[in-house]
Length: 285
Image (cartoon, rainbow, N blue to C red):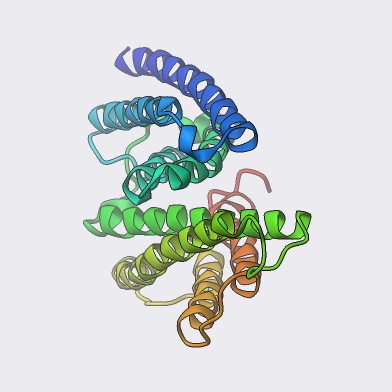
């Protein structure tokens, strides 16, 4: 009975979040295209904050009903990464121009996360008891850190994609563009987000290997999820190498981060939904 009432509340929260995100997306992109940064107001930020609270409320309700922190399936992961995505926006912005850029990127991405949850079968969306392998103190440590890293890396990659689109469409160079400040902001935001996500990904992989040894008797099994996590780590380590060691900025690192964007989606969703392995949900095939 309690779960049935919860599912009604969840539907209401989802519908409200969708509507508010659509309004926020419209606001951010209309301001980005038609108005000057200096005239930016806080309507979009307010709407995103409300969505943040709605998703947080949903997760707290799931925690209350399931008696464990909601991290155990793909549905929970999507809600958590949507929440983290919004939190990153709030803690990373320094000025109105960055606030607008962050909102224009994170609002559509958060919308996609919530939409993806609708495509998951009801059997996976339901609140179920933890399986024995997940009854570990490592659950919150490993999964939370991995989701934090995914959210930050996806954000950083999206800023790199925006950088490339703007520079290519306007036929400009990083040095001489009249939109140089916009490009510099995008480049810096990408670097900061990836700089946050990479050490979190490293910590998540290390904690996962320790947990794997406890649960399955091996630190590394070349499971599809583990393999793609390693590929993701290598990709973003190359990005940081080009920035920190080679001193490159602009298009070249942005191309690497763009490649990382597709790789991390395979790691986060593709392996879980299609692949076979210890981390897979496997409801497509």
